[in-house]
Every structure is written in structure tokens, then in C-alpha cells.
Length: 102
Figure 1 (cartoon, rainbow, N blue to C red):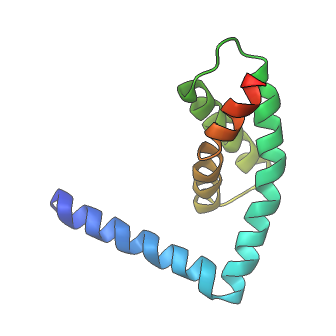
Figure 2 (cartoon, helix red, strand yellow):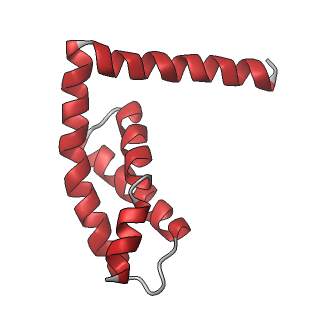
């Protein structure tokens, strides 16, 4: 399969997943569960990153991946949910960076 077809397939799959999360009652319930997991993890990551000297985005991203992997195994989260948490937490780097400058 060529790169274009792979990208098209993965994009369609991602779109279908996002549509499922937004359109169905079960999806809305899953999104609420993810949000409940997101805040405690984010607060834990902020505390951890503040302990590092000169934290960078790469350090934060590695910390996010490690923390979510541990959390997902402890809470028995599905791989899709863990991936979604990783993406959401990585998007918050700017907030963490602003917090560090204070």
C-alpha cells in the first residue's frame, strides 16, 4: 500500500473515530471519561516537569508518554484511550511553558 493510500485510510479511520466520539451517546460518555482522566494526569505532569532543570517540549512529550503508559496499565485503559490522552496532554505544552515562566 502506498503512502497516500495509507494516509487516506488512517485519516478515514481517525475521522470515523472522532465522529463516533462526538455523535453517539456512548461516544459522549467515553469523552467524559477521558476528560476525567485528563485533569489528574495533567496536574501530575505539571508537578513533575517543574522539578526538571530547563525542561523542553521533548522532555515534556517523553514524560507524557511514560506517565500515560503507567496510568493506562494501572487503570486498564484501552490503547485508543491512552493515545487520545497522550495527544491531549501534548497539546497543553504551551500552558505548562507559561506556568514555568511565572
